Image 1: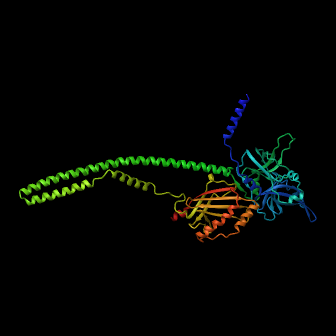
Image 2 (image 1 turned 180 degrees about the vertical axis):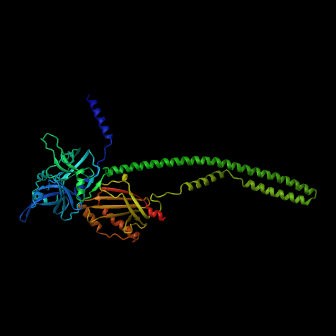
Image 3 (image 1 turned 45 degrees about the vertical axis):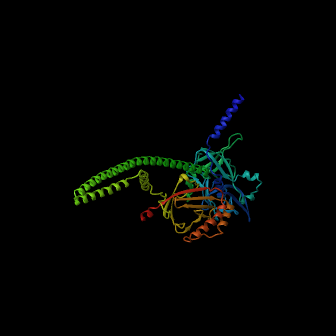
Length: 524
């Protein structure tokens, strides 16, 4: 009996091991999302001294604007002696905020930092799932207490806490639309984002269900059906993304499948062409063989006929000689000579059997020259220089933001883009790395002019990595367009120092397929 049970368990384990599991999104997405999350502190004042009264959580949605719950800022709304403070997760200072809008009906509020913080805005999910894994990001008070943090520590930058749970579906409350989930939240989490595995906002955490201790705990988040109209009503155009949440591992696996399918298709086409060529060669060899045999027979017949004529002419010339008819002898002798020469030429000019192979090769070469005029580059051929339109290939791309679907790109043979941005050349690849001073992200753009493919990889970095990238960028000056190939190679060498400071994998990869624009095609 025990043996049978063990056998069944082993079989079950084997089945589970063979069953494919969906790849989770990259943890770096959640880490990137946390850098746009802030602690929202309600501040009191006693003379020159300030002190925290309560706190909640908020997240950036664009510019210096931050979303939180209405009940987080309710005390500041009711008492103008109180202030609102913002403490970023990654920084060295806290700033004051002003109230932009409050909607008590759906527990939403919009505040704005009074000083620039450069917070990366979170992306809103345009097509949130109904089930699946979710993460609540925020500043739970019980965690602060467990770590022995004092109230004054609230003004110090601290990374937010991420709690994982499952989405239990939409559950509209009496007044507004909410999401029900099991990602634990506590006092202080209010106003923080509920995100999917790609770090996209699915809701704003608001409150939890009361539990008697033995009941399962559930929590509520204001859904994007409430959030989006609230943002747009206050002049905020949030970053949106409705694509499927996929990891780079998923993307790479799909690309390998496409490459294997393309390779298999190419092999089938090559095999088909080889079979067709072999069949064509056989048919040509048979046809040309018959033609050569006919030509040989005709030449031999002609040579035999001419020899017969020569023999007759010789006989006639002999008769003329006997009869002393000089004219007959001369004419017949001339005919005999011409006939012998013609027979000789016919014999030696008859085609040999080797002519079959020679003629087959010539015909096949001519056919291949007509059928295969050479490979055509996807962008229309040539070096890829000219005005191009690059279209986003969503099947090969991964993005958590809202990228441009079409990009106009003017490319020169010297690696200049749009007559103003020089790309670096290293190991035969054209690349330009952009390290902005106001955004915590590094973009690595690569362009393959022959394949007509533009790839943009974005790395969403924390403060330390961003500082290292900026320091590496500050050690060189990018050349202007037209500086020459040596300058392009030098730029490529300098950029390798930035690549060394970046994580192993990017957060986003955008793949664009480029082709000549209509204006460029019409000029040609």
